Image 1: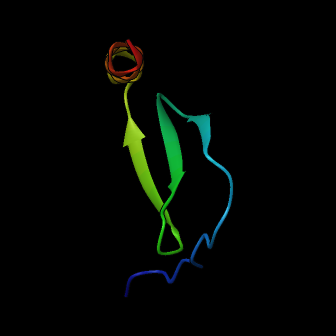
Image 2: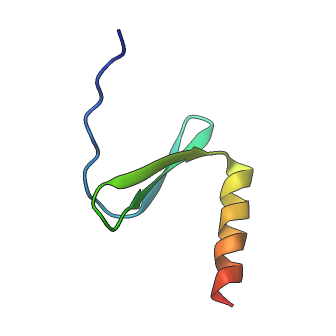
Length: 55
């Protein structure tokens, strides 16, 4: 039987290192948060893409 995990609820944008990867928690407009686990090279790619969008 799978373990039940509590919902994270609303909260700030955060990125934390967990093990070998990073967990990003992104608040959504309708409530709740999108939780994504990504690798270090994907963090860099995401950062580059976001910086490119600002220019």
